[in-house]
Image (cartoon, rainbow over all chains, first blue to last red; front, side):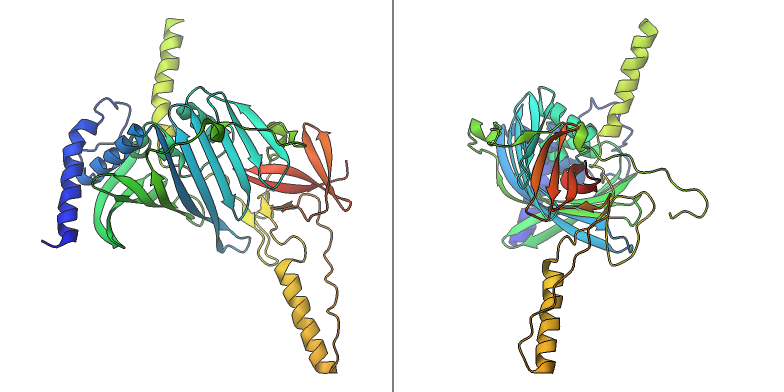
Length: 271
Length: 133
């Protein structure tokens, strides 16, 4: 039997077998009807297997390259790249190092506070946070306006975050990437169409993600490539500890927030 | 009281799925391209700070062309960079800046008489040109 076919069967079987253990019947507020024909069971089980894999990892690390489309003033979409190194120790520690076209910064979460320090500026900010990583992620999203596509993968319930509100989930098939086979999945929801590529069957992990924000003007795309997964990472506690550099100034988060945009002009104004 | 409590619990429970989808796009900001103007009120980032590669290349090309035409080594013309307008958003400081600390809870950078204040756009730190404090 060709290896790709046997791998396909092995991963599909593993995902289907893993499914019943992972299907969250308790998720009542979700309107998603996973029994409808729009929901391929392999795709849903793959999502849950990936989530279970990440949930079991108490100390893990990976790297991600994020390509984000942003509009130019002439309407052309421009690509900006962000390289992120992620280190997580569940339930209450995280470090993100971002080196990008637009900003270089390190973010620490130590179970009490989120600290942010741009590498190129001698300023830092400390924000009180929840006692768990999930709470810190909510705080980053709601108060800090941080919307990285990596956040669901860091939470303790990635499949619930990703599957709630879905309108469809489909298995596209396997693709060959070097010596590996990746499972290509496609999902739709009200505001976005997104795709996920997973490795397997022994470690079901995300390797690639593509999101199209269909309700944002210009329908920008965000692509993510995941590499260097280590689900048993030995991360020293010092990695999660912020040490104030000499001469750096603490700046209040509110002072760094953008000011509200000026009021929209009525007739004759620019759009 | 009890009704109010139930309402709060219910609204919290119903609100949960809204938080639980693929991550949103986040703040939408425009990058200056040529002379095109972004929508009114939009955050526009000017990524062409300083002469950069564009200016250096232009100067090199002009210098080479002039040298070739005249037959002599001609120094490239200086690249003049206009002072950015107040409100201009840039991703990096031009360099040789002096920090003015404790300014409204933040810091201000004095870069040759142009003052910049750091501002976060999502997770990206930008610098906005402000009037002299």
